Image (cartoon, rainbow, N blue to C red; front, side, top):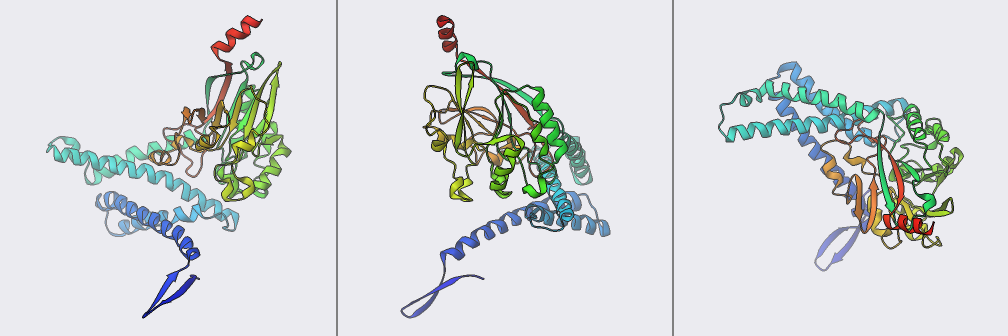
Length: 416
């Protein structure tokens, strides 16, 4: 029911919406706008692929019906968390997520071929490509591009993660920690379309790297503990000499963050909730801090992301590493003396063309970047969210080797 207030001015009656009613309307209007844009884009695809290819009669009706059904599946899948029974929800989510990915690739191919046709038309070229990119030939060319791309993108997303290796020199790193190995896992998203077998393979890949420490930088799960307890149980097999550490991502808050923060320690995973641990090896120390997700405070005041609390009372004069799900946390961490931040969240863009929109939200999407004076490594993610596809952004497990800076090594040699 819409809440309204009424104020009477002299000579007229004025109905004004209360602020609470306006705030409730904004998400609905935003959703309506997004669906309208999606509907227009689906219409564009249908115009080029169905009408443009000359499909008529019952086949045309069937093709248009399928296209609009797939459009309807997008919001159904995205908002299906409470759908019952669970089997129906899983089917709806698979259809929704697969179509989101296929739609992105299909739209890109339609736009690309139309641009080529436009360029050839402007050039008034009699070349064969102009004829080949019209009507049925355009539709055939699009399918020849998109179908292999879908297959390769699914294989990339669900196949073994690529091992990314980098060495990061840290100021003040003691000789005893030179060569210290941190393995970062991020954005696995165990849930509707990724299960326990996928996680078991990740655990095996991580253990083969023989890490000193494992950092899980959020979005590990997409579902509540009661549904995913068995799927996540293989985490107990992770091995690292100095522990396994976890910070929440935004998807933990959609899945019951407090319950997961209770469940993960049972599997041998230490949750860093705006706090730190001191890691020591061979007389050298570093501080490992972890913060809740950038948006955690929107779900609970107790989960507000606080780098200042994470490093409160931490020892001075030793390197500081921060685990933070979103790269933009670096802005708040800039005053805390952080020497390295490990983040994820972006999936490296995951799938073309959506990667261009990620950059609107985050200061960077992948790799080692300098943000607000802090070196930030941004993982492309180890799993995926939504479409079971990756295009131009392979999944990764990251092996980060800490090293002394050249000056620190020289000092250590002199002291020896």
